[in-house]
Length: 321
Image (cartoon, rainbow, N blue to C red; front, side, top):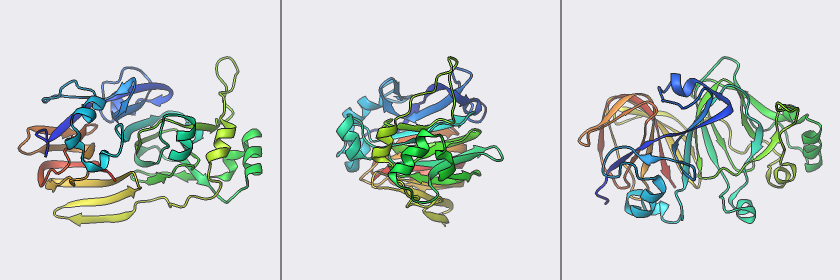
């Protein structure tokens, strides 16, 4: 087992036109601008890479940690030539365009990116907020193309009015979009390859529409209702004094919501490190002098056994499958 047991990461922020203010107000992040759309809390992306915060590796980029400390990450990560996960906090003040991610096979044929499977967990939202996930009914490719071209696609997709705690697994090929006034956590493969399909007929300051990726979307989109229903994989259960809910599992990762009151023990499998993304409260990793508050992103080394958590808090724990 590695000599390093835990690594806390410093987030990276992206200011985009549809971003809001909740990353500052809800998580108390020191965001750089007025419209911060994303906090990348577990990222090795070029130009958006998290670095270690404190400890022996302070200031080291995640990609370098991954390359130099393979025993920390576990055997499931060894099959990947680069860090496999990308975790974000997303705040929307406006609707995000409807888009689709390809699978690994298609992505490899057009780029050096992976495809993208991802999970959404709604942290907070305003009444009436909604998101898009897949189609209402199966349609054919010709109808799909026509609806993109005549701006009627939105009437054929599944639109969900969301509440705090809602969970959605977005498999590759699923049309999806986050509506305005939603704060969510996104856990997914380390990829940003995406094809824009519908942009609500918006134009920029010059009266120009943003480009759509129609042919690529037609190539990769599943034109049938989602095969994975909205909601958690396994209901909330009490386990050894804490509550745990399996939010989702894929061939790439598995994520669970932990709710701790007073204390709990957490163990990382030999095969994977655990990513801990704090959503509420404050927890201390007993014996390691590490405190975690909401918004913190911490990695616990693969093979760590019976690590004591003291305090009250809620977090998403993710492992690589």
